[in-house]
Length: 82
Image (tube, rainbow, N blue to C red; front, side, top):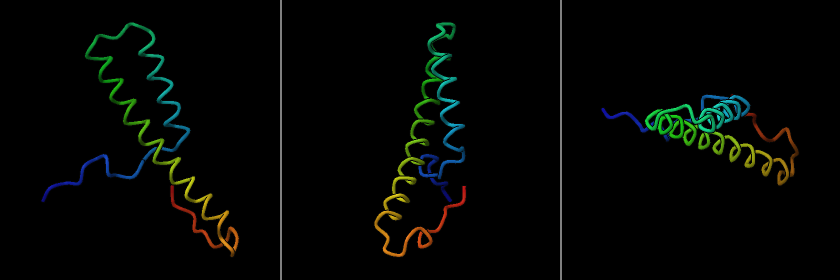
């Protein structure tokens, strides 16, 4: 059986950790000390992290919208396990 693509997997890092790793990637790229191949690898990792972060933000936005639009109030929205 074929495995599902990694892009379809749920984020495994928390938003703060993703943001921290993105900052580290930017610092590495800005340092000018990486080879072209290293720079590409760091950039690719950064793109993946940015996508994971966006997935988390999208989920948070949906939860907030459910809370705002819910007639039953916050108790009607289940918390997602993180």
